[in-house]
Length: 505
Image 1 (spheres, helix red, strand yellow):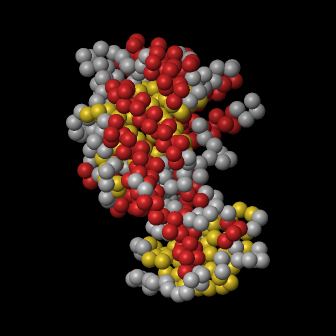
Image 2: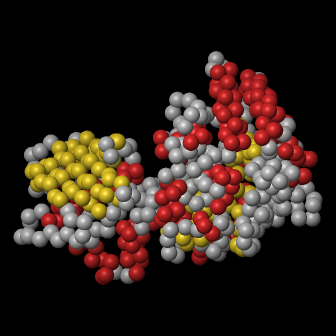
Image 3: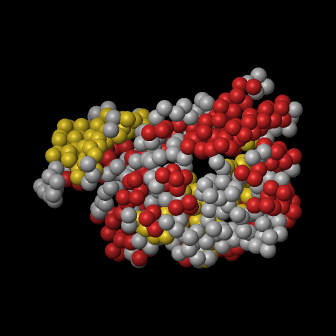
């Protein structure tokens, strides 16, 4: 990265000035109080939207002037960027990157990575190691605005689900439980790389996370300490099969978890065929009462009952209806993704039956809503007026950039479905990201990088689909899994139909 030029208008003591920088080392020298530090402050401000001297923007505007303007041009890799900032005395500052205004200052972070040393930073020498670690974390680790971490708290499971992409929790590796020390480093990494973003999301995942319950509780407690120290807020999620769910877990989850994902595939015969214990016994009878109790204790909010439909239950609308009849109001059922040779894998020839099933499900949802027995079905929830921000519509979940999966031994992968594939190993919690080129590859993946997305009407609702599925079937993240695409288009059509049917309700 090279800063090419800096233009200042009415900033500090500068009426109008333009600095052209060499691509090598630049030295600013001169008498005291001539504005050398002001130049450095301007670079830092264009990189972070804040000053090391104070929080009031109006103090940086030249005396008796109504506003100031900063412009920085830089070269990052082979791409030129331009950062424009307007400061006004009685209004919020305006920031534009490459001519496009940004609404959140967090979107500025990562464009220009800087480390700023000032006399105020002498405490990194005078004080203890904690101060030095915090300085390094906050100033040097500008890798990306990571805000979500998927903690594989347990690479182990007490069920033997036939379709499990994680191989019953092993993820192409070995069974293991995450230690508190590794989890602690993961949370530290998340905070250090989150920039100015306040809300951070952590999903306790597996395998089955309740097999490592003690560490889950310890990490939540540590996260609450970090909140106070760094003015952050952790939104914790737990994904569980429910086998080990009890009163203690329920009480803790209701107090600390913003969301809970409950894994259940549907009717008893469907669930027990695909989600048995290792001795072959079904899990339905054990977990359903626990899930019902938990859902009621959360007032039917901030949870999802999540199933998976396979070729064995292409009549999955009956499973969704079964969920609703059990009293669950937040429902999701996902199509399985398997190898073509797997007997349960969905095939292209199954699509007509699946489309009929989505139609049947949509009509059932309309009827139940009109009769006062409605529920939310995740794949039919669509916002036609607002919805996700532009970046989310373009690139989806943010895997590899805003979202990372952390293994029990601290390895970092773009998401949980890439865990165990060494070509996607990005780094670890001790060293951070050691292969930034992987993040760059994922950052460049969007609906505009995928040929099949360019003419698809649903592209801004699925955001190009799952990159892991693309890689699974095409060995590139910049393609799509056509079977999933067809189902997504049908779901969007059904969602619009439901909105139209209930418009007068």
